[in-house]
Image (cartoon, rainbow, N blue to C red; front, side, top):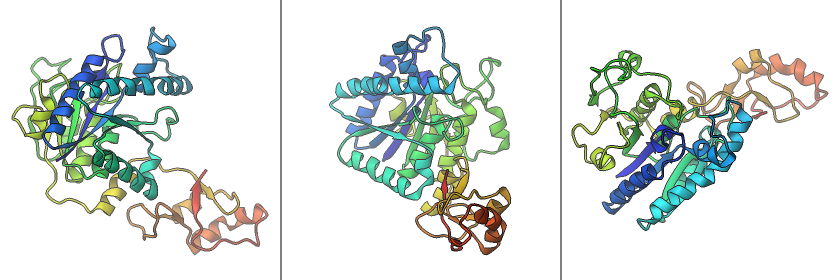
Length: 346
């Protein structure tokens, strides 16, 4: 069985917001147990910013400005991996760092390269530890939380199980901070609007996710044919319980019976889950107008014709007529592009 397990910052840090080595050691021990049982395990780990805060003296709280957060992530990422390395080393395992950005899932070639790299790591007996590349990600092009990243990785690797480890027992009937009578929902056959309305959107002070993001990730994974378990990170043998489908281990989201093809899954989730970029002509810098872009087709989006390798923008004759004044104004009137002009991100 191929398993992707995600653990967030709220489960990896202590009350002061520092990385808790004991929490990482617990997960590493459970991963080692599943490796011994013959399963392949990929870890999606948050915590780069939390690991970098104390190193740079930010003990008073987490900064809000993006450049500072990116700098903190750059300092903290290798410290986070050093902690994972020590934890896995106690069990004779070697972790491998894999930093991904949304564009790695949008560009088909990058998408396939990411899959090949992680699968080769698994073949070599390495435990891939995946995280978003926070040091270069910005507000416009980023996952926002690692729940969605974990679901995309599960889809990328055609995993059998996605385990989302959090600081609650699973999906509850109400917010336990507001309702003491909230109870665990043990099984979900399909995620609908009613269920989504029960989930809280905001994460904790130490994490960017929340139950709403986990439900969104679970929905994504279910369409990929992946069983999902949302469970408490501090629960004993939680990973083993998720693999063996132990009753009460957490909330189990069943996969859909009809699994979409790999290409349709890539279109539906890997492409559409990331922000659409602004585009300009790769033939000379003429910007595509909003009206013209609405008439262009981007290969890799639903409802368009395919040409590989996607995603590429295909300019139709009608769209060319719309952007022709801009193209001519750029001094390239004689360099009329073909109707299959490729448009690249600015």
